[in-house]
Structures are given as C-alpha cells and as structure tokens.
Amino acid sequence: MNSEDKHAEVEHALKLAEQLRQEKRYDEGVALLTDMLKHGIEQAQIYYRLGNIYYDAQKYEHAERAYRRAIEYDPLHINAHYNLGVVYRRQGRIEESLKLRRKANELARRHPERIKIRSDQLQQARRFAHWMLIASFALIAVLVLLIWLLS
Image 1 (tube, rainbow, N blue to C red):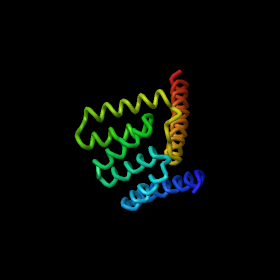
Image 2: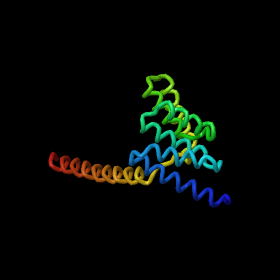
Image 3: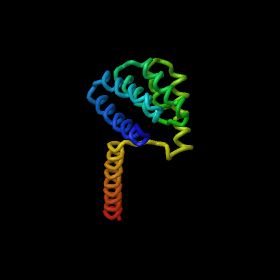
Image 4: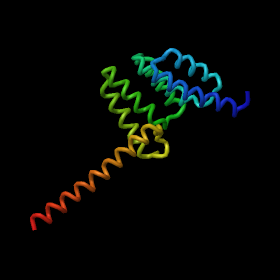
C-alpha cells in the first residue's frame, strides 16, 4: 500500500471512529483506531481520538495514556493537553488538571493555527455570532428610542 492510500485509509478511519464514538460503539472505535496505528502515520491524531473514545467510555486511565501518547508524538497538540487536563480533573488531580489546561491555553495563544475546530463547532460559533449581532442592533435601537423619548 502506498503512502497516499495509507493516508486515505487513516483519514477514513478517523471519521468512522468519531461516528462510532457518537453512537457509543466504543469497542469498535478502539479496534479500528488501534489497527490504524500499524501504518505509522497520524499517530498523534489517532491517539487523541482513542483518548476521546476511552473518556466517553469512562475508561479514564486508558484515556490518560492515549492523550499522553498523542502529546509524545505532537508536543503542540492543544486538544490533547486540554483533554488530558479534563481527565485529571475527573480523577481528582486538580493541580495537574489546572497545569495542563493552562498549558493548552498557552499553546493556543502561541500557535492559533493549530487549533482544530470541527464543522459543527464552526456552525455553532456562527449562529452565536449572528445572534449576538442581532441582539446588539436591538439594544442600540432600544437605547436610541429611549434617548429620543426622554429628550
């Protein structure tokens, strides 16, 4: 299998694993992603997604290991740092949690191009921005009306 085919297979597996996670078919997602590790590409992303599946399955020790591996492969993986902090919080390791979440925020400030936003998150942000724009115009209109009525 050539490199292009491997990349396509891994990308497909990442998408399918996310779908399996949403359907709570955790064991299938883990098996799929674990199999993709054989290709030796996108290791950080595969481990990150494994961490997400393990977290949702409430296997926090497995999630911790997966996020740590993602960070080993990509020390600038912002989401892996943040999610590892979330795992630590769940485990009651508050100081470590805060440290990692601060590190994730620092990485995001220094490397904004590395922030990965899913399409559904982008749509949600756009809806929120649209709502805020409408609310701002409505507030300005009310203030103008009040000023006009009071003068």
